[in-house]
Amino acid sequence: MKVALVTGGNRGLGYELVKQLALKGFKVVLASRDQEQGHEATQKFQ
Image (cartoon, rainbow, N blue to C red; front, side, top):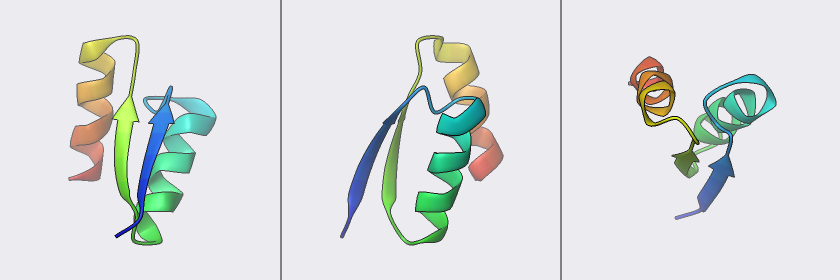
């Protein structure tokens, strides 16, 4: 299993990187400075 940690994954380039890695089969850990925005971003992927 491939795992990736993406900082700033809740918006912009980080968000797109999370999306692309997930589509390629990675288990992605999304990190965000703002907990609420990070949670909202993860909900979009579920």
